[in-house]
Length: 499
Image 1: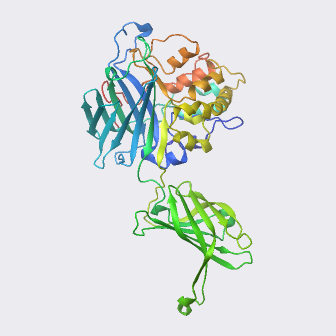
Image 2 (image 1 turned 45 degrees about the vertical axis):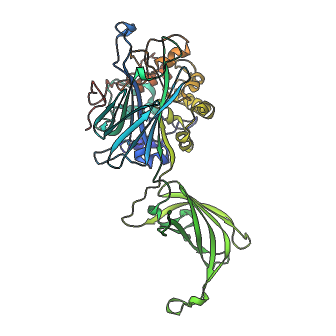
Image 3 (image 1 turned 180 degrees about the vertical axis):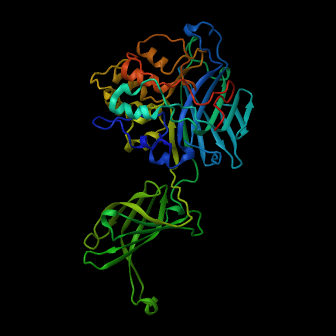
C-alpha cells in the first residue's frame, strides 16, 4: 500500500522467518512507484455490465453487453491532483483463444483523456466527464476509493490470528479518494473466445512514464555517508544551454596523508537516475586576494564516479580509481544533508513504473524485488520469475492463524502457480457475478464455471482471499465489512462520487 494514511503497511514483508505481511490491494509499493504518485497504481477492476447476481445461473441467461475495466491510482488523491501528459496507462487483454489486445490512455496538458485500442476503438473526454464513441466509452477523474479494508484487524491478525476478525469491521479507506480511469468496451467489439460457452480473458494494467523522468535540478545539494561524517559530495544540476542539463559534483575530504582533498567532475552523462563522469584533482596557490589564476592546474583524470539515486534523499556513489596507489576505489551509500530552498525534487523513473492485476499479490514480493516486479511487462515470464517467491510468502502467511498446517483451499504450490500470473480472470460470456476467485477455484478442481468472476467493485476481495488461503471457510473469517463507505453508481463510471 502506498497511502499516506496507511504507513504501517510500508514496513511489512512476507517471507519465512519475517513478519507477516499483506497489502490492501496495491496501495503501497516500491520506491520508484511511491515516488511517482500519478504513476502509482492502487487497484484494478474488471466486471461485466449489466451483471446478474442470481445464484445458480437462474435469471442469468442473457449475455452481458459490456466489459468494464477500472484503474485507480494516486492513493489519497485530492481535488488539486491532475493527470500528467508524461504518463501513459496501458490495459492489456488476452483471451482463451490466445488473441492479445491493449488499450492505451493518455492525457493532454489541458486534462483531456484519450483512449484507443482493439484496432479501431477510441474515445476521449475532458477529465470529469464521460466520452462515448461507438463501442467504447471512457471516464477519468477524481472518485471515492472503491477498496474497503480493515487495517487494524489486519495488524492484529499478525499477533492473534483469525481471532482478530470478530465481525465488527472498520473500513480504513473510508473517506479516501483516488484518481480513476474507467473504460467500457462492448462485448461484441471484442474477439471471440475459444469455445461457444466461454470467453475467458486475462487482463492487467500498467503505468508508463514517457517523459519527465530522471535526474533534475531538485537533486542539487550536499550528500554524505553518516558513518563517514567529515567528507562528502556537493552535486548540482545546472542548465548548460544544451538539450539536457549538466550534472556537476565536487568531493570534499582528505587524502591518505591527511591533507585536504578537493575533486571535481568533468562533463557528466545523465541516464535516468544515474550520472557518471571523470574525476579530476586540481591544484593552485594563494588564498583570497592572493590567489593566482595562472597557478591553477586541472590535473589528469584520477578516476571515474558513478552516482545512482534511489530517490530524492538516498543513493549510492561509486568511485573507480585510475591509480589505486594514489586514491583507492570505494563505494558508499549516501544521504542528502541539504537541498535548495524552494526547489522541489521529483526523481522519477522512466519506462513502466507500476502494474496492477489481482489484489494483494504484489504484497508478497519483498521490497528489494518490487521495482523489478512492477517494471516487468512480459506476462510470459512472470511464473518463472516470481512463483517460488510467492510460494515462500504464502507458506509463511498460512502460519498466521497459529496452525502450522496448510489449511487453505488446495496447496500453496497450486496457488503460487496461479497467482504468479498476476492477471485478473474474467469470462465475458457470463452475466452472473458471484465472487472473486471463482474461476480460479473451478480451474483447480477442475470443473466448469457459470460466473464472470473478475473483480467487481463490491467484491470483498480481502475476506475471500483470507478464507481461501487460511481456513477454507471453516471457520469462516468475517471481516465485518458489508461494502464501500459510499454507494457505487448504478451506471457508468460506476465508482462513487469523490468525498
